[in-house]
Image 1 (cartoon, rainbow, N blue to C red):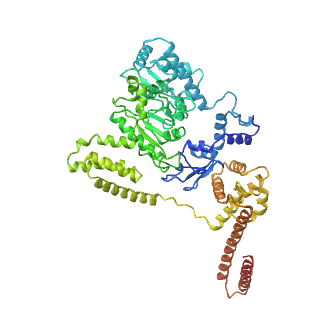
Image 2 (cartoon, rainbow, N blue to C red):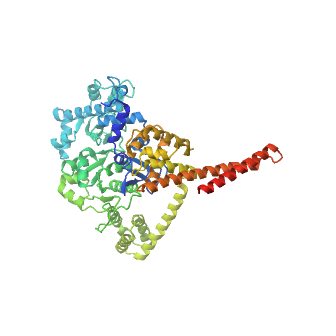
Image 3 (cartoon, rainbow, N blue to C red):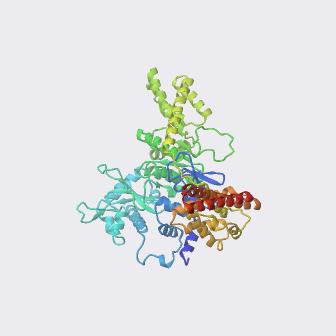
Length: 633
């Protein structure tokens, strides 16, 4: 057991991977030694957010935010330092110091809520498989009609919530408080507020697990046609956020990694049917629309970011496909091109695309669950293997309506439907090929269609310029003196320096710094350099020291990034960098002092004898400093 909080923090930091931590919130793409993505702290279209895995830090060159893995968690989740440490200690099985232990007999609310959900899932499941009643018979018949066997029921812990109002509540209230059960979404207060009733009644229960396998929520399917809605889902809670959780991910994540691709479906039973019949890299949204957080979550499991959209084939499903595609495109915006042409070509990079979107369209027009049950999983796998790219799906979907447009005026309107799709193609050669194909298919001149595309592209470019001007981030102007002082202090963070911390410290006197923050940081470095062995340890210690001060952490990140410009220098050049910055600081200070002297000289009253003396003294001082400066130069 760690004896001190510092030891706990150190052990947690050793476990944290900055890329994994940031990837929970930001889709990252490797470029050189760094990873890049769209900043989570301000809106941007071009990635300026950088992650340095070697030093364990992140930095946005757009808004200036920066820090280490702990500060990223604190900022993105709006948590204070101790809450983050307690959560991570629990996650990694690290025992907290005695002084920070919770009092005996009390448990974390989130932990109790998950335990209550787990017991509820076990209760519902046991009721379905081990008891007999008319309700259970109806539920079993429904599941059998959907080709859901006992093996599938066990794998997905399917269960039954009885019609009685308090069956689950009567069981769980022995172990959990009303507050825990209500916040976990298992019970509701009666209208008269005189007691509690079960939230789910007379429904087939589908337990929902997070990516770690913990039970956090439920989906409930009505057994009777009179029940409304057909599906009742748990509300968001402390342990469940439907916009950030995908059904089936816990059982699918290994297959997603192995297949290097994921199939997205809409319904619970779509996912259950697919996984149960051997299509294992399948997940579903939990009663909500696809979100950018869902895509960020998935991007951590598929390196090539190959995403198949397999929604229902009705009009609502088609709309969901187009909405989903838009969300995916936005999530990967700025990280490179989305794959837009089905061909192989030579590339210097293994990561040719930011992502690949394909659409699964079973020919019979059935939803995924029905198709797999009636036609078979092997046929479905073949359809997935031959699934068209998003752009081909979109164009084919529009072309299906070409018979509806016959007159020239109607064709003009028809052409407008293709323009947004064709504008998504960034490669000019590929776009021209698609333009020829579409023009031929709808019977228009390809040059005319290309002209319309170019007009639309110009308008889009003008709009983007206007948006950029309106939303441009105003960055803080940093004086030359402050920049130079930062340059000087940054040499402590040069990883491959030939000098020890003590040697660098001898060359850099504290008097060179006038900025209060930099003085503060330099003072802390002075204390730490006797106890740390390398730059990475120094960085970790400094971020921990300033964990409650995000402004200083931001300055630290600036210093670390500046230090990268001084890498791979010879000992002579490294020493020259220090000397040049010291000389520049001295010159900046002397310029400030001269300006103050000139102002005093101008403001002196020439009729006053004492003032004239001051003037002469100031003149002599200026002349002496100028002579001294010339000698040094």
